[in-house]
Length: 288
Image (cartoon, rainbow, N blue to C red; front, top):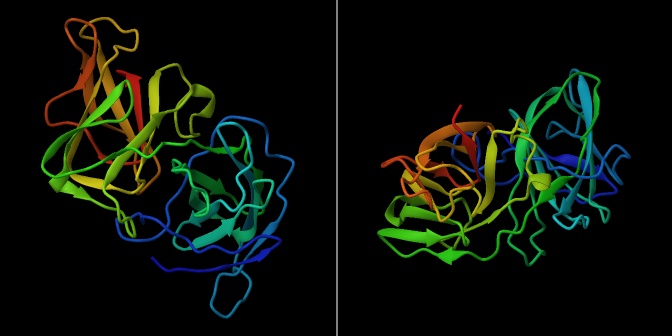
């Protein structure tokens, strides 16, 4: 993937970062969340500079406006954004959590949002697909929400059960883990995300049972990571469940495993040898 920069008016400039769509280093997309409208515009502008010579972007262009907040609704200043297709455009939010991409090439993108490196909290990384048609000015209908995942559990070696919270645990073969670029600590952390904070690529058709945001974003496993829950999520014994993850490459929600409520009706476990491989977002749904 090639790297390109942006010229920022009123904002600081940030390079794209994180796992690429091909599993190397590069930028990926992000998720949006529910909340107050961002249609009021952003506090700064991002003007596309798509060549090392600083020339204007060739062909049709578009504009993307939005805001970034935490789960309390507080604006997240200096959050780092990467808008990526065949090239990546970086940006950062202003003191109101606002951002604006102006004059970027019209294209299908993935938008990824990370908390500022100065933020002491470990925050989930929303990422989602964005279509920017020619001459469009798209205001995201709601702020992008970053949940706090907590510090998590350090990983050892071999097979390990990692408790994420009071409900969710992962069954991990630590020797199969691949850390994301520049990540120095081997850990797992996560938080169950309330429905009003679900990312934009989680369906709202009533099929979703629970959603978790995980860290470290971009970590992968060469073998499936099984999961178990200490709750049946209100379902009857033996009810089948689909396990989905948001793929690091395409930012799309995809089914990766099946699970079921145990016969005694007090927990949920994935089918043997099935599970997630990308540490991003986990979504449990009724079986379709």
